[in-house]
Amino acid sequence: MLCTRGRDQRAQDEITYDGASAEYLTGELRFRHQSGIYGHASVKEGLIRAQHEKCAFCESRFTHIAYGDVEHFRPKGAFRQQAGDVLQYPGYYWLAYDWANLYASCTLCNQRFKENMFPLRDPTRRARSHHDDIAAEAPLLLDPGMTDPAAHISFRKEIPYAVEDNDVGRTTIAVFGLDREELNRERRELLELFRTLHEITQMDTTQMDMTRVDIPRLAQAAETARHQLARAQQDSAPYAAAMRAAVRAGFAGDGW
Image (cartoon, rainbow, N blue to C red; front, side, top):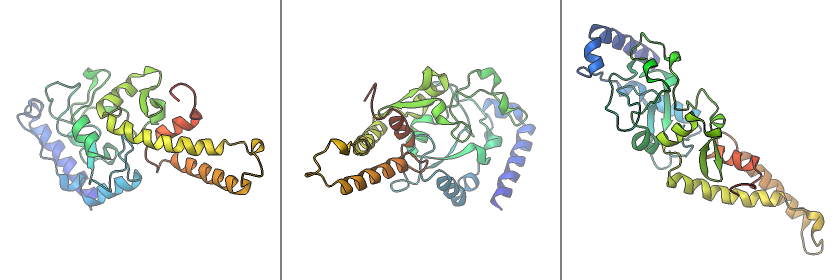
């Protein structure tokens, strides 16, 4: 039923736009999007469940302290190419109810940072209506449902950086505020804990005084540590991307 409502509303919006496209392009007329459709409890719960209760962009778990937002990757109402630009109308109105354009996001990533930003490598190729093909666009924001984030963003300890200084990684970090200190602190504390667990897994029992060490107990602790490290790298874990980067580096090398 909800899918039908979204499909019907999109069809109606497309007809409405075609009847007054000039007025919608200037912002004289604006769409009244139906939050009861894209923000319906079943939609939000489905997104949160699919994303392991994490923000799609910063990987923070937020459901224990906030309701979070249903974020439109391509902004539904209006857009900006870069910070400080005047809002351009309309937004991607025809994608307002499209599952592929919806993510569960923490409030900070959505409202404090990204807002209406949607930069393209070539702004002249932007889709301005449902008659245009969004496949012609080259977004400078990473779409986590379509692209492996690790191809564009990695971590030195808790700090995110763009792999080989690629523009998608740099822009995504900036627009979503992925290097904000609050996030860095959370990742730093988690990584320090797991660095200790990693050290436990690397202990060489052959160099220990057997009369002073409970080897079976130490072996069990190391196995538990390995299990916890593996869990911390799964998609369901908070800040899994930073943890994978740390494990790949062996918690050593530059920045460690």
